Length: 110
Image (tube, rainbow, N blue to C red):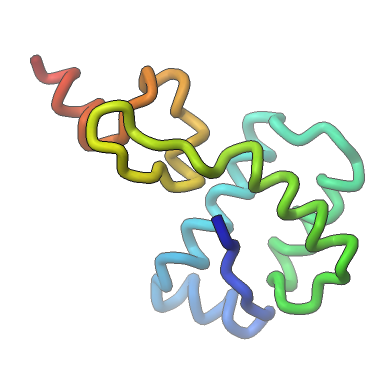
């Protein structure tokens, strides 16, 4: 899964205008912090930088670390429909028994 490439100005616009990919990505990073899922100080520093400045000026080493973080949560698919689970929803993948949000909601209603 690829992360959105954006700068500080686009980050501000995304928050105002609701650009989904950037807003979802920054929400994912915020959730990683709030849930204490990133304990490595290097990873924490990169997340802090991205939250303020975006991703477009990351060094090659920083990009590699970011991609490592993302790889832990990407490439998950719903057990029922096979759709890829978004990064933000992948944080609850285990609790959702491997289902996407739509199917988890439907199954919870039954």
